[in-house]
Length: 352
Ligand code: MRU
Image: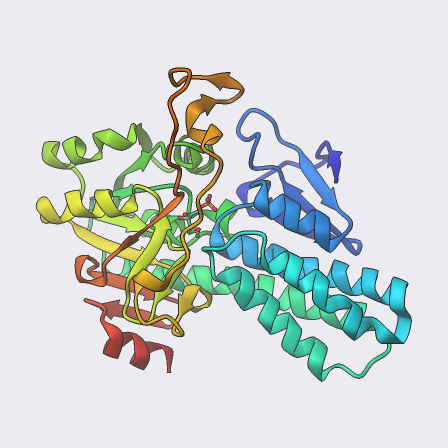
């Protein structure tokens, strides 16, 4: 991995950049203090960048993995020539195992695998690059459609609370939950965004705030524990969040803390929208109980930056996603439209 200081004016739409046959990721570990890109040369480096959160957010992980497959094809072809299709498979598996919860990762790799299967050309790189770019472009188009569908549900002068970062940084561009926010803002209907800080990686404080402040969208930061009080005080009409995987019955996995945010919303009679592309829906899983939940290093909780903040000797539990039952969700919004009060039957129909 090589660190590159940007020669461009960096925006949230630069989370994943493919340029001159090279893959660059905006390093989300160090935003907002430092703007730097990491250049990746191999599938192994791409998998490590995903695991280490250089890039994060389900759709952005999927887009990155698609480009990672191009790097894998280059490696496999350089090493094994006409035998490249056998040589690439272990590299795809390394990519697939980078993070377990966001299904967009295996969705993108499976898509690229199907192109590899169908390919008889002896030079795979150009063809697979084209396909990865299509996956990237389609994600942006999906987010714009999600934004508009989502905005159609939201009333004039609404307050929206969001969790983690489901913005341009977390996707190919525009964002899912923040795509809805952007569309609501464009339509002049947005009063205020409240962004949960999102312990322990602080995606809300570091990334959502960075994106929205830059776009002059009104945003106020909240400690995660302040969300229920904010709802009680008024001014919150909707919870709008993204997702890492939606099960076949509409149960939603998203960043840890989403479940209790939604429980608080239900108590206060506040609407709940989950905004995600269909690449996040995993119809092979009957319910959220089957979604693999990533547990990360307890150190992420015990320290802040490089400074230990917890008492010496205390252990920590660090699951980084939770599952909200479909029964607590008012609307799932994808690029195909809106599923109100989602359940297995409605999800089946929506995805058909
Ligand atoms: O651990 P992260 O930062 O990858 O988690 C990201 C989230 O939970 C997002 O809310 C989700 O991926 C939706 S992104 C459009």
